[in-house]
Length: 314
Image 1 (tube, helix red, strand yellow):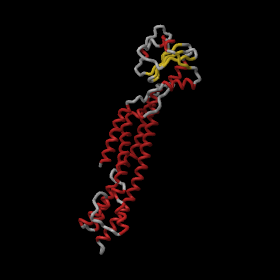
Image 2: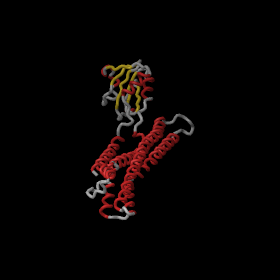
Image 3: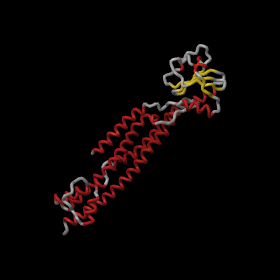
Image 4: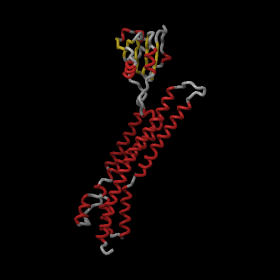
């Protein structure tokens, strides 16, 4: 019981942690990613002192730049902040160029700014669970159910709580049944009922089947997760594709690439996560079913030995 409470508390803390995770900067870009893209494009870029280009710092005087860079006929300051509105920036001399991609903002000057701006605009955040949208909640719930039921059943189906070694030894040695055994395990409870209550053969066998049935508690939840998680993934895929196709202009054209990328990410990620939840759950369910079959065979052996011992003439 203590372990069950610990598992429940851990899963609740994990669920609460997911709410914080969903507010994480899942659509943030790292400044190093932008510099890497510049290097891959074989564009020169080196850090210089901020004081060398004060004109790049004036429009965003309240912000601290990541660094100021000197490129090929283009100098720029890079800012890492989501609270920058390009429409509010003041460029009185009209000599500066601005570009923004999620949290990264570029303020530059020079005739060769186009390749640097294009390198920034082409950056895309890595896929994250936040892109699942509302599907993160049912899928997270499925994951928690799978983890909880699997851990609880693995704990409850261990030999000490189902068919202890002392019972197996007693069956093999003939020192059986032992009235001093407690009722901690399924096997000991069956022995207790057989020796203390003197039930009929049919009643004893029925009670044994009840103990076996109790071992399968929660299995239907695993079966639901195995079926529901891929279906949720499929639903997310269809939703993402609908989101993409609904934004395609009727007269052709490129449309909003941000909506396209988010829709495709939703379509792919929900399928991946759904299968990632269903496959381990299926493995866990198959293993637990096999374990219950093994325990049930031991219980059947115990029951028949009890029948032979208590009712030798029947």
